[in-house]
Image (cartoon, rainbow, N blue to C red; front, side, top):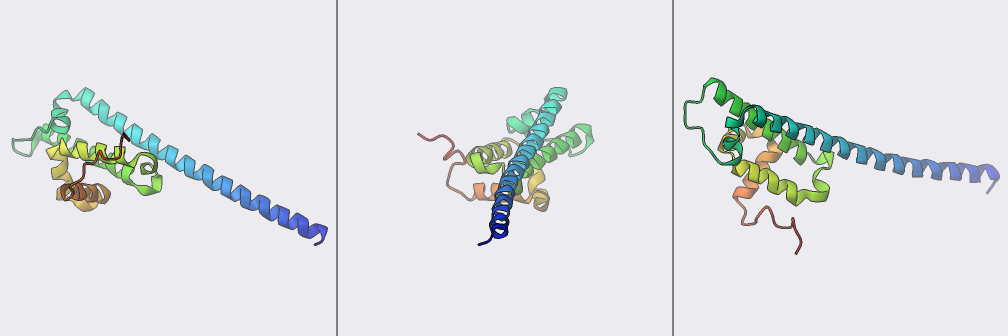
Length: 155
């Protein structure tokens, strides 16, 4: 093997190592951006509940909207439900890699949010194609005998 062959092989190896390193950095950055996006969305939801405290029971306490489905309050609740579902889709989007490290926790969180919010479930089931990952998780949960918290804390 000549000197130029050795240099070419060395350059090829350096290129491969560099590509692998770049891919790892890219994957980490995408995951970081996904977390940042999800956390920003959660903070926006928190702000909504601070600004409109009457809405909180519809998302955390299982309260149902019993009045006519019209008016500012109802439409605001429907918009909040849409925000919840958007956050769930971001978390469940496997391309972002948010589920990899703590999937059971995220799944339990999403299922708990849905279970505590009839208005969110109603919105989800009225147009499942808008939030397909969340809808699939919800359907799996309804047909499952397992607890979404299984596997979160190892004993």
